[in-house]
Length: 429
Image (cartoon, rainbow, N blue to C red; front, side):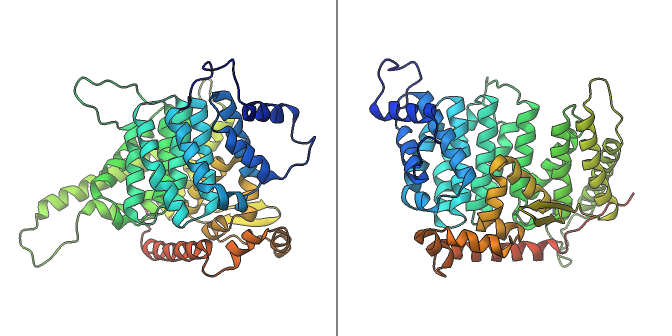
């Protein structure tokens, strides 16, 4: 059982005191194998004191930001997952937020395959239940990010991905029973929901989604463009750009027409096309306005410039079909994006990983495959020399879970690329 901080505060186990002393004295005083430290932090997750568990989770997150710890993951994967899920179910908001982040990092460390699928299947219900009770904002944000990452890594079919997307959607659109009231989600929560939803949409083909869901989402994102919160407007704008990039507007025309079927209601199809034309014309006007918005009282210049740049890119795409091109350096190696899909994926993972982004981009094979990123050979050879025996087996064996998962990912990317080749849509004024 996980008790609150004030429970059993007068007594602390030897393991808890050892962990507290280790944290307070600093790790630099004694050089200890990192996996040994991870074992100690994992043991600390069994402690009754919430503050001890929070310290342990923060330390685990820091460790996974600095290294992927393949040997520890291979040996303690299931234990770490279950303890983090316990923290989500019974811990404080801070503890649950830390545990959610740790689960996302664990998924990125194992890469796609059986273990990532296990993380998704085991975590889906606890995360959904936690979101349903409307917890603190910090906890909601971490839960949404966690759900997005574990689905991105572990989701093996469109049904799994769409299920997670529906869970996210309910955060902003809760289904209420009779006489049930709920607090209105904050702009930060809605913005994170939209970003997480879009992140998962980057993995989907338009034909795999329910047409009604698409129509509802475009209308909803259009309303968000009129909100006062800039971060929310930018998230909604990028979501709309992504939808148009993958060709989703074709979904609104309904099922493919059968010319031999005389029962087709041509009038209904005509009205739907008129509605869609009006909707996309409205979106274009909103985007054009936001790309040239003047600063108002109390508006931050940096935020305003960021919004203008984002919506200028969206406007250029909608009018001319020009996708945003970005270039950044990872340890001296170029990492570029040339589509809204890649742009959204990169920004989301960069935000989630924070200080660990560069390290993961340099060493995480899954991310190399996602972004078609190849670090310098000298960095790869140096990393290989530092690999343990189990790490080398994970990379080199053609029958390893990592290599099998890598093959699945590449096949999925090829399928998506084929589906998106004909997905471009530019607005006509």
